[in-house]
Image (cartoon, rainbow, N blue to C red; front, side):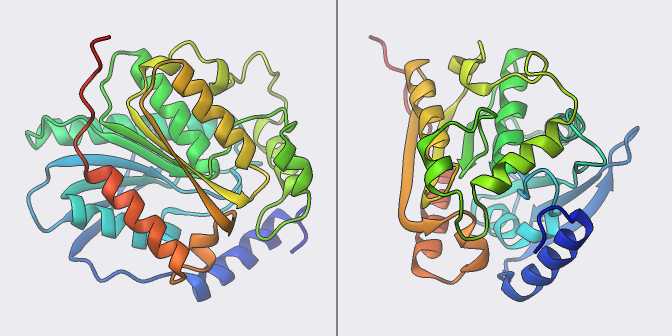
Length: 287
């Protein structure tokens, strides 16, 4: 693909996913809802069993590509396995809609989910999750939510986009790599931030509300330009007092679980994520 041809990249990615997309046969009802005001589409996955919680899932795609349908399998599995109402926003994409459009859409999607859970009488706090650029959006959504006093159950960040500086060792080492590389990372940030100044876009690494985040899992992949910034984020969260579990998947590359969904490492990752979302929250330490 020509990374500078956005329309062509979208067509090629959609065609790739048509071949690689994993199917799920979980008994889940899928509906689409439009957010009032913006008209942004929410894809909602409701399990056949009574709902016990909620999860906001944000798809990846370098802020430019993708749709909720790309992660239908993940959302169906999580909705059924954990009796969760899963909501995935079809957020506005760059470069047509640069920052902060996607962040605004994800925040609105979380508010919609919280309201829906309240209407259903579900008292459990929602969880937030995302992959790649969706990880960046999930993290920002979570930080903004806890800043307003909203309680979150947990946070899952899979090979997340974190840092605009692009100075991590893995960014240089994997200037060329499968699926996503250092050069594409630079192009991604240029499209997403457009004319935004660094003082407007807030780095999560220095966010004052970092310590208010819930139990978090950060997943990184070995041959990935984003690997080191994901690890740096985990260290920053630990330093801020967040309970963090870090999983670095040896021998894998960015988004490997989307393009090699039936591989042994992808199966292992799905099991790890499911276990993390299903386990009880840790008891706060008293020392």
